[in-house]
Image (tube, rainbow, N blue to C red; front, side):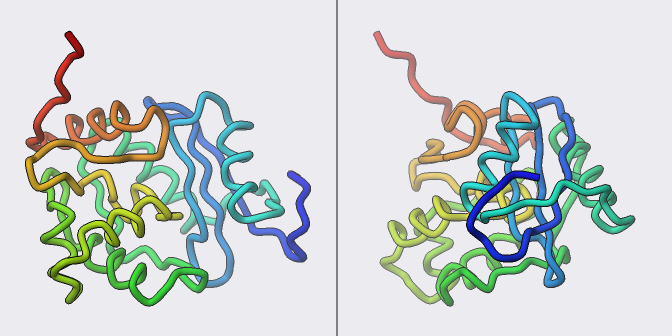
Length: 185
């Protein structure tokens, strides 16, 4: 168990994937957090405990195992969608929930830009606000924030793993089109 000041621990399980260690935390409402592309299981757990407090590493239930296996298959390049996976978004703002709900509708191999996503949640000038909501996304992969690009088709930001490099790897696995970053001269 990883200690913290949180009064009740979340259940958590870890797995190794092609892109590094994966950890998922659950509670009775659903997925509470995801950490992936970490160098070790310990690092993935530290990332989650930093965001969620105390974690109890457990053997996953059948439903949780299905999600873990699906995430590992996704990170190996298999088309897997998680649109119906229950989330505990109780700590998210109304705007974040709207962004995450809309983003879950973007299918494997497709992308959307920040401005278009903002317009879809009735914030037509809210591209930066969408970027901030995605930066705080506690459910990466389940809420596929890697599928959001700048209006130019460039990658934009990404906070998991090695940042933009991890985002590019995910989009490449999905066969999605994006503008590759330019090499520095």
